[in-house]
Image (cartoon, rainbow, N blue to C red; front, side, top):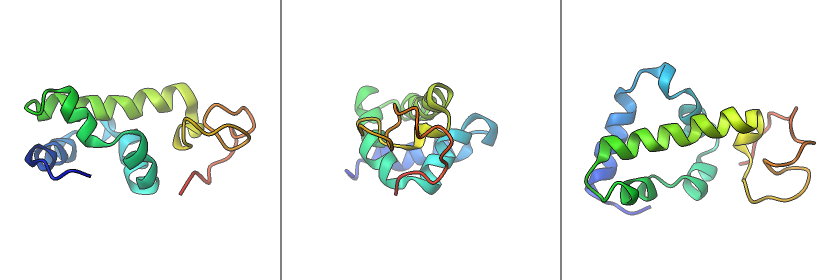
Amino acid sequence: MNSHPGLAEMEAIIADMPTSLKTSYDKAAKHFLRLVATESEPIKFLRCAKMSAEAAAAERLKAHWSHRCELFGDRAFYPMGTIGARGAHSRRSRGSTDGFH
C-alpha cells in the first residue's frame, strides 16, 4: 500500500466513525485483510477523492463494504472475481462463514 499522508488521516476518520456506521468495514478489516487490500485498497478511494478529501474517501470506503454486505450477505467476504463454489457470486457459498484468508 502507498504511504500517502492522507491514508493515516483517513484511518483516523474511520476509527472515529460510530461503530454502527462501519460494521461491515470493521468486519472486513479485522477478518479479511487480504480481501480489503486487494478489492478495496484505501488508496484507491483517496485517489477518487483527488488525494485531498480524506473524509469523503473514508466515507466511500465504509459505504463500499456496507453495500457489498447488503448485496451479498456473508458472501461479501469472498473475492468478487472468484468463479465457482467459493466466489461471492456463487449461490453455493451463501451459508458459509469461513471467508477467504
